Length: 159
Image (spheres, rainbow, N blue to C red):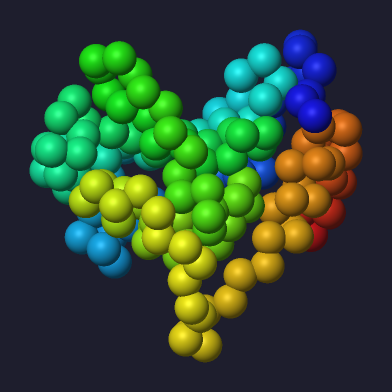
């Protein structure tokens, strides 16, 4: 489900914080993020995280690699330059709205040439509930997101 074209864009997209959280968790694995962002293209929410080539095995990713995400296909590893090979990120464990911890762990292994990690175990130090993100993306597609932002702005103006 995508948003109709021509709709106004808010300053903050529903997946901004999600993309940032994944980028932050990559650092736990020693992965250097060079840049990234969240955007909307033709009504589809997407995002990218560029990874420093030194963080990836040159044998596995000779041209470099970046992470891509969109609301329909989820997480992808996309080869820089070259043939632009696109691989789903760890299809045994990573889904469209997987925890930033899972995405980071699977990415770290993929950058080292191990494309399948499987689900990680939560040691109790973190929690992840994808429902707020999923709801915000669903609302975005139905224009409720803009209505919620407008109501929030009105509430802030009244305060």
